[in-house]
Amino acid sequence: MRSFFVVLIALLVVLLLAAYLAVPLAAQQTYGDPAPYLGGWQRFQYSATLLWANGLLTRPADPYASERLFAIPPGEQAFQVANRLQQDGFIRDAAAFRAYLIYRGFDTRIQTGEFILSPALTAMQIAERLQDPTPTQVKFTVLPGWRLEEVAASLPTSGLSITPDDFLAAARSPGVAYDFLPPSVSVEGFLLPGQYTVLRGVSADELVNLLVGNFALVLSEELRNSFAAQGLDVYQAVTLASIVQREAVLAEEQPLIASVFYNRLAINMKLESDPTAQYALGYDPLRNGWWPVPLTLADLQVDSPYNTYVYGGLPPGPIASPALSALQAVAFPEQSPYYFFRAACDGSGAHAFAVTFEEHLANGCQ
Image (cartoon, rainbow, N blue to C red; front, side, top):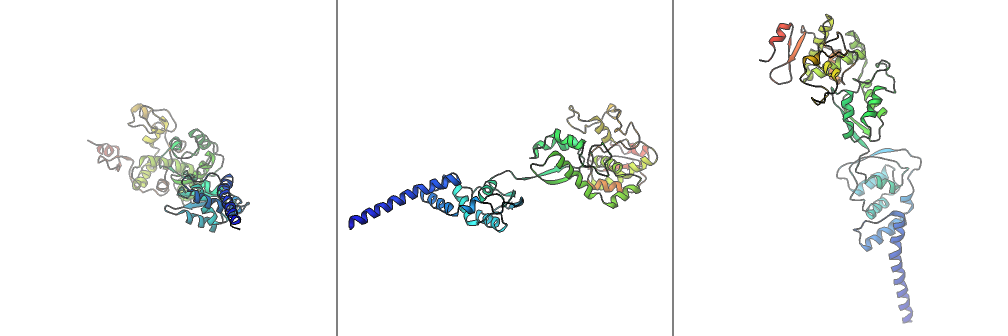
């Protein structure tokens, strides 16, 4: 009898040892390599848990669901993420998901940020996505006064995969028609400045349409009517606003600067705006920029319809993207007697305004 119990115990030990070795191997085949820092018993424990949970991790919660945004705030723990994923319907079971995270070593590598997930993914696939340190969405900024080429130049460091050339091609031949854009013109001036949250994989056409679409959203009926009251259609108003944007350092001066240009247009006086000459010159490698300074006499004489020192009236199109404040300045300009302005001598960015050319000369810095 004693020998029987000895044999039985020995058999149980062999079976337990076999299970101790076999269970982790079985789990590894389905769930991948375990975290290297797991001890032998921990590896067995989590391997057994995963094998028991099997379908909870390998089958999606909803095979026909679409993608949705899931955000993980700073400081949220793995068990909290797992609970919310189950509550939001992304996974079948939070406990099984957390066991998988610990087994793979993913529990300490979940990233903060926004992720595009779907209940049509398995829990294992979702866990993989949460390890990606690259956010699915990025912030893209268009600064007031940028021309198309400057927006394009910002793309290589934006986190988007769009090349500058692809962006410029899309911007110069937009695929969507807008009632405020004449046929066969670029979207210069209509990329509303601001910070945008966009998907990392957005295409050039989609980005252009997003930016122009936001311009369309701020183009209220009031703005349209006010442009018309000034004798301008939307395209002309944006053209003038782009000049105001480039001329004004202080946003509060934009309505007064707009009044100067309106006063000049009223008497058929040339606008003589430096930014229009800069736009006509294009990129200057010697002065390292799209808006070269200082301008020489030869620069001011460049033969281009955009150069308002040479040609009267408005240039043929916008020279940059005006902010909403510049658009409003053109829609609701101040009423003034001024025909001239120049930078004030105190370095504040303000301007000194004058009625006559003599007063304008007197405003010059000594």
